[in-house]
Length: 301
Ligand code: HEM
Image (cartoon, rainbow, N blue to C red; front, side, top):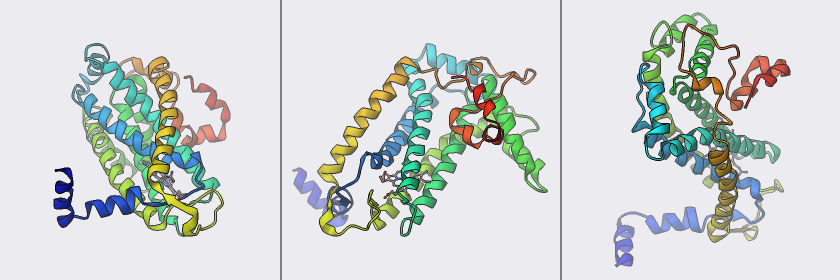
């Protein structure tokens, strides 16, 4: 019965041929190390963030008067709401850690060299989209750090030549950060992961065209390549197992490690917190942090 269904599809759509060419039989260098596991892990995190985000959105209220309480409601009253939220908040940190390792691998092994330039550029676009998504998501709990972080970052755009004030107004949707800002950030925070999905697809189309590099940096002959399945499906799943052990430790035993304590206080536009600090994954982009390492000390996990 199954075979007949597959044959029926194959006569109309190249399903089996596609799976064989691009998945199971896809030729892969036989000498890839565990550093090549991180692209798969990044894809896994993207799916986890989308799924947990959809469940959070079922209970979250994108309204400045309700947002903070709706997150408390998720944490205390929704069945396993705490788990969904901690998967999502810890997941954001894990996603960045994985992408930074993935980029470090690309730099170390010069994976950005010809003919993989488009892999690197599409990757840079992915990083930008990921940063925008994380930044907008951080406003949603409407805590003190959410509010003041958004205040600082949206203000940076005032430095845009000639149209700085208009750009800031356009980003915030109002003269100050408020309900309009929260609603648009929620809409884009929901939309962007699907854009990222599309760019990841292009990233993989480019990869399958030029094929993976390998630790030697040499282009390999066909005899040095093996089919992706079962060798790398097993290797990716093995890496996923190790990753999940570390990830679950943080989700279940240290879930607040990456959440700024100040963010458990509702946003108050009349009270600036003593320290406005970005999430750890934005620290390298904070000019004052790069220039004055003492400011790293302000980052309290
Ligand atoms: C959503 C984020 C991302 C996902 C899901 C993703 C996914 C993948 C996957 C599955 C691979 C093949 C397996 C591997 O080589 O690890 C790959 C390869 C690659 N990625 Fe990414 N990637 C992401 C972000 C990035 C970023 C930010 C960069 C760099 C700016 C980048 C640069 C590359 C390069 C150069 C390769 C080719 C590696 C090689 O063949 O040696 N990727 N990516």
